[in-house]
Length: 180
Ligand SMILES: C[S@@+](CC[C@H](N)C(=O)[O-])C[C@H]1O[C@@H](n2cnc3c(N)ncnc32)[C@H](O)[C@@H]1O
Image 1 (tube, protein in one colour):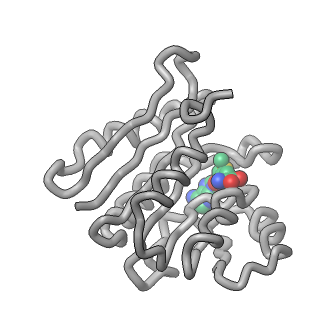
Image 2 (cartoon, rainbow, N blue to C red):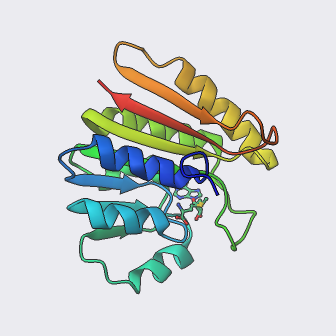
């Protein structure tokens, strides 16, 4: 096992933990099985978690986390539900592990959501995006997301890509965006 070059979710969580000092409000844009929401709810005062799958929301409800607001809707509507500025937004793109593989994030709504998130994060805030290109929609979505991120103004956003370069070409990637 590697200590650092291993699980991309751990890297995303470590970066958030290390660099966000005042942990007030976070968004998990892709709740799924709730691992990122678990992390965020321990660290932040308030967490908004989105998933289009009712089953994901219903499963998480059972945990009764008082600081987590669960939203059974698409993350491209972030602004409809979250009125305040936020410190971080986490994305884990693709389909629910162990769930219906046909229900997956899609590039149009993902890009709309990232655009909203870029506006909503505070100065010094962080967005993490786990990108999975090992399936058809994922490859298309990943390319579109990377293209979009490459064109963000560098005087406003720092964008870093974590990529395994000695693994399969379809290994996942992690993009991290920091707002100046
Ligand atoms: C890779 S999983 C997330 C895994 C999750 N981070 C975890 O800890 O288990 C992606 C999730 O995004 C959800 N999803 C797909 N499209 C969405 C959308 N437009 N808005 C919100 N969630 C979406 C899927 O239903 C799925 O549960």
